[in-house]
Length: 310
Image (cartoon, rainbow, N blue to C red; front, side):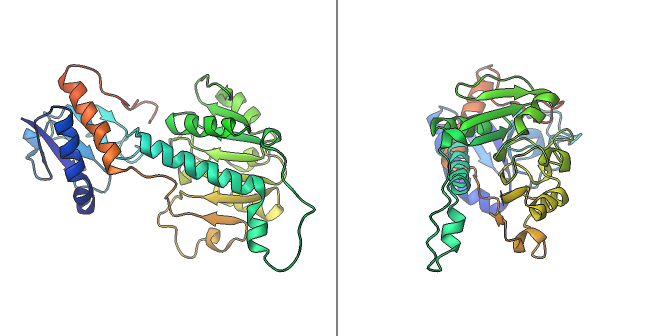
């Protein structure tokens, strides 16, 4: 019998219990899934930061901790976590992110906001968008989510530049890396999409100096992590008009406080961290596959590099 501890808030248990049991059965695993296994009996932990497990020291038998979310910044620095940690890379999560990014990129590219807001009898036909091939889009972060979003935009014809800390090669994208590559990726970009993990090295990636590199009238999309943007610098760039607008899905404090300037800013659209989410049915398949792999003596998928922070 394999003992799997589900450590997340109670509402997620109701959502995940049945899909996880089905996925384990389909993988040929005999599993006892519970929220109440004694630490010394736990073989695997399904983990969310809002769950009860904070100290992993008692879980000496545990072979793998599997996060339910793509981001691991809230757990990767936990000194008690010495067990291997896997982050969630879920096809449905990726697809949801692609749909949000493509939708809001097209919204800005086509200038849809002006027409939606301007239903006042004025025939505004003097401004029209360029073709996608003439619009420069930069995706910061070329992990599973960034690569998928960049590829989807390239397939629509956009001129996409992708940036990552280490070199990548992705068909259809101009791929840059390193500090010099970051400046080149941002230079003249008309739409910037942030899909980096949040680490000490990526915090405030879009600061005043880097925002200044963007094309005048650029747009910023942040479905990644709130700490990737220097909020004061972005608000200043919006005030000057250098940045024409921002669509933001993630924030340093969530829910975003009601008195935060972003709520009332006419050039900012706030979405409540819904760019994509983990779906129980598909995520359960990912979790079951990782348990199957470890039980078979194979390396788990999507292991986190503790030194890199993702």
